[in-house]
Each structure stands twice: as structure tokens, then as C-alpha cells.
Length: 249
Image (cartoon, rainbow, N blue to C red; front, side, top):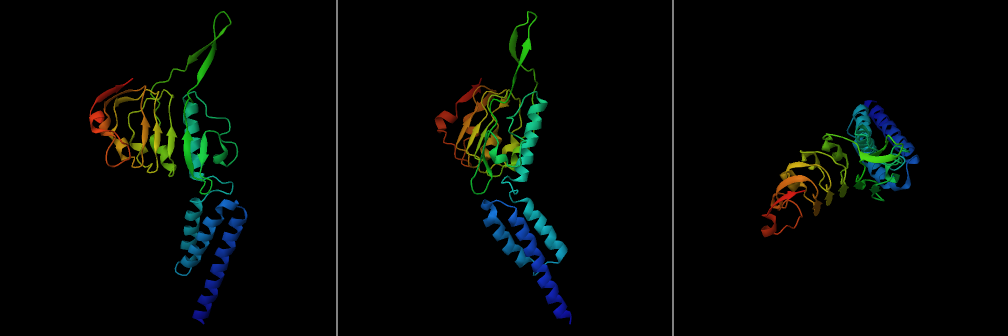
């Protein structure tokens, strides 16, 4: 009797999981079907060994890793909104499309993979705003906002696991710690030009294992380029050139 009861419970468990997955699949876009098929097979197998409570937890974790029904990963959308808040706190603005709708892949300055819907390119260049002011004679003039070092926690970019290009140029940002970028294992192109970065060229940039090109011009940085062109990444800096010390202004 106990064996029959366990078998009945097992069938009901598999039916509930299957129904849950089918309902989730019904509200998803076509490009997520392959992911959901894999998840369904995985959960059905797990259901044979895990009690219902544990299986539900697994389902919730896996669901959070999938694109939302509108085609944008929730963790990446949340990171973009955090970036937006940071720029706004510095009296700057992100494109008006940001925050409109759940599909961050349709927002300006963002490029996603057509299949995985992960963000591949993030263009945050020239988001620093000039503010028009009225002069005493009634005319209008443009001046830059007076912002000290912008304390952006670069770990915010760790949510973009498949990011290949990051353009953060011309934002007058003052950052010294670049360790937060180390998790971007797919990053190939990094543009940090026209900012106010100070200190030595950070050796932590050498940990970007896929890095092929970097732009550091127009910054208050100094040091040897060989510090970032190592065997751990794909930067091709000749030894004779890399040994030259630079002051990037």
C-alpha cells in the first residue's frame, strides 16, 4: 500500500511540475522554448529524488536564471536600472527608452544576443550631461555639471555575464578601483577614454581573460602598458612598447 501511495504521489508530483512548466512556457516568447524544454526534462528527473519542497526551490532558482516572458533577463534589467539611478544621482540621464517595458534588449544603447537574450554590448558613452543656464542678459549658455568623483561600484557590471563590449567613455568619472570588472570573462572591448581616472594603470585589468582592445586615453593615469597585457588575456602588446611608461592625459 505504501509503495502504491508513493507511486501515486510521484505521478501527481510530475504532473504538477509539468503543468507548471507548460503554463510558464505558454507566456514565454518563442526564443525561450529550447531553454524551457531543457528545464522541464531536468525537473522531471529531479522530481524522482527530491521531495516537493526542495523541487519547488529548484524551480524558483532556475526560473530566475531564465529570460522573462518579454525577452530580457531580470537580473540584467535590474542592473541597468541601478546604473540609471547612478547617472541620475550625478545629474545626468540615460536614454528615455530605459525603464519603458520589460524588454531591456529593445532599449537604446543596448545590444542583446538574438537567441540567449543576454546583453552583449553596453554603450554608456557620453551620458554625462551639459546643463543649459540663463545668463544675466537673458541668453543661454552651456556648462558642465560640477561633479566630484563618481563613486560607481563597478561590481554592478557583474550581472552582464556575456558582455563583450563596454563603452564608458566621456563621462568625467573618477574611479580608482577596477576590480569590479574582473567577473566579465567574455569582455573583448573596453573603452574608458575621456574620463578622470587617476593613479596607475590598474593591473587588475589583466584579469579580463578575453580582452582584445582597451582605450584609456584622456585620463590622469600613468604606468606601463605591459601591466595589463599579459598571458592571461588577449591583448597583444609588444614587449618593447609595453615597457614604455605612459602618462595618459
